[in-house]
Image (cartoon, rainbow, N blue to C red):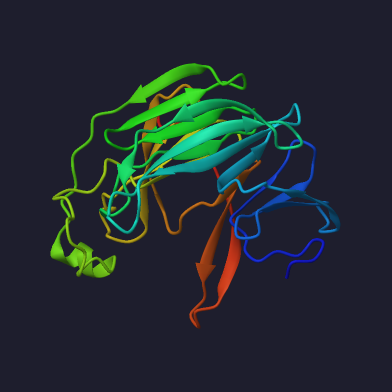
Length: 256
């Protein structure tokens, strides 16, 4: 719905440092705030800002992952660049923190920037033209660049069928260096790879510590959506196809 506390779609959500549940409704251009018990508190209008991921900082400002478009769809010149901007509590623009180059949205599998936010207000930006990740501190200053060698994974006919890409034109020969990112509340970065686990089931991740050092590869049966206090949450399906949220416990072992 479109009334107080109602939403058309949930595009992003997080638990804020102020212990509120924040929901981004991009289609309605609104941010909704609830108590952790689910009681509606207030709504903030996004003023036409197209938002992807969102983060409420400890100082009360917002980091918004937005898209900047240029060109035209009709003549196939439309390009977009992902960016992270900081806004005040009333959504007044403060500054740009990070921005990707422009990519042609008409072509498949473009290496657009991925953005994830940490509980300590650090910002993780993944640049997938290469295996590169930038880390910004709470002031928006670049503090770390993570670069890693990788073995390109070829896009086979089987992969095209599995990903419904059989009719796609202009696909590259290889996948991007990595598919997605997720960050736990200790600052560890989990990099989702296109490479398959040895058993062929699940999802393979590179695990990096908070300093960007490689720890290990790990296989997950489902993709982690959210991390909290050594637990991660996934969205899975039962044998009848119904979705449910599953909470998983993380146990770290010393491999020495």
